[in-house]
Image (cartoon, rainbow, N blue to C red):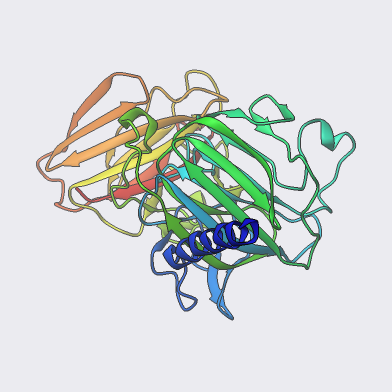
Length: 374
């Protein structure tokens, strides 16, 4: 009788496991990046090689899914190709980078090689599967932790060039990470708890393979716990160079790309950087900061000097996000949490205009430049 009961339990367990396995679907087709989109990287940052997603690591940024997920089990394998490589998996992420940084707002599952080591590292991070919220997200961590960062209960990840397996179970705001077959870290009360899934580019080459997902019944995440929906935003800046922008030789000497930022050094205030693309009705998002107090970064719409929007809210040393809406000849500019400014294009303005970036001569920095057509 006991043997029969044991066999029945084993059969039921195997049946549940088989049902679970049968419910998984590939998150990557092995041939191209269908179902994925680059958030803020160069065209060459992400590619498909030998049925793997390959990342060069440059610039810092993300590749994310084109749809949101709420409750699920995600499985994937990863390997670093260089000692000390850094990357991550973004869970319940935002559609574009968070203000002032090249990363998504998300819960991050650390993907860090053992060669990434500094004295005292175990006081605030490990290389074996930390889970932590970033750039506006929040989480109550399980087990040993530092702030909201959950440290793994056991060191199980392997160093380059070996493969590691992650199983990330997420349901109703609870996240649990299994590293190479055993649960080690996680947290609860996550905000967001519905959003996009992403892979991180952060300085070193890395491969991902065998990505698959099992979706679980939704628990109805409230709007305030759900990431914004993508409005088909596309980045206007590669994070590496000035591809997609035009200027003459004089202002070109003032502009440089450094650390995923467009930096304008002090000089002639008429040195404007223009997009190659011209836009009709469009929405724009960009982050900028001024070099000195009282010297605003400047945003233009036009082809010559154009309409000077003078984003007065840009403070020195602090990135601020600006939203720009163009509808016909009416232009609205809003800062995060600030008042809306209204502008009107002149009667001679063409139907399609370029976006321009500039300053008042004292220098400025720009980051996270996106556009979307309404």
